[in-house]
Length: 186
Image 1: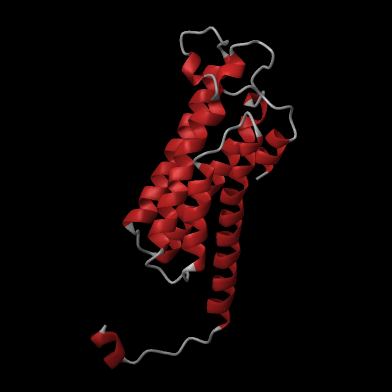
Image 2: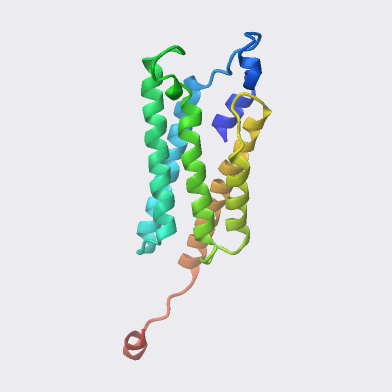
């Protein structure tokens, strides 16, 4: 969310044919792409931690984790290439590291939402994940559509709050001791 807001307050960039008339330039974003990288790494760490604490890895949660890690790797690669290239470089398509590193974590968000449909998260949280990811697919860092990146950050924050509240409820609930008959029937 911080990355999106930092981009939104910058002057608008060019989109489509406007980029060729020379009147407007692209909105500079590479200098703050590290903020996006840190957030994607934190999301990957959170998903990995939640999977480990739960004790089992669900396929869609694992897929979400892989997509977040791949997104972080692509963003890192874009940042490295961006440091050593210019707009006329052979690897010009890697120059916009925001585009390169944003789409894969958004897909990770979409997969996480789909994976949560069968979990105890209720229906509202997975629906928010799916809607936020779909809205974020049309983000353009050059114009007002950059603000469509805010819902993805908001749903991950809602997920973090949900996990914290669920952990608080489970630690507050008394645990009944199991007898040997109960353990055998499981």
